[in-house]
Image 1 (cartoon, rainbow, N blue to C red):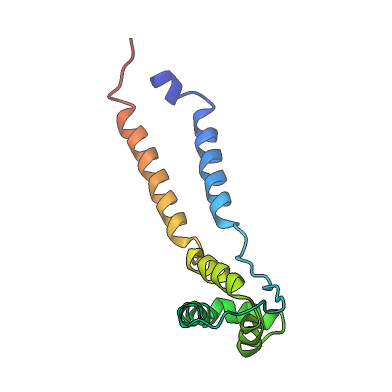
Image 2 (image 1 turned 180 degrees about the vertical axis):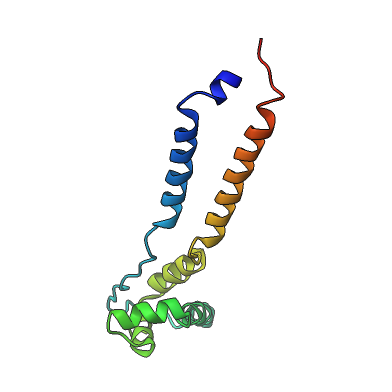
Length: 140
């Protein structure tokens, strides 16, 4: 084990692994948004149960549109939140249900600082552990 740890390639290998893990986590792409295609509204049955479900799903969509990230993306595409809601109101019940379901499944992305700190701490712990154990392990 000592010969493996003291080999000429161990330090460059550790440096390469640490830098590659750091570069993979630091340069991730930004989150992206896209337009919701608006189709003409199909036949509406007018039942109160469906309209209550539609209202609840529209409330979920409205809550998602109030996010700062979504509002910024809408501004980038040249839409105001009111225009987006006007387009969403033109969707059919099935499309609104699908959109509301997908909105619940979306998870907010972060900037990755926590993951980067965690990886750095983990790499430091591994290096310290190898350094401390290199004198105690002997393979016959």
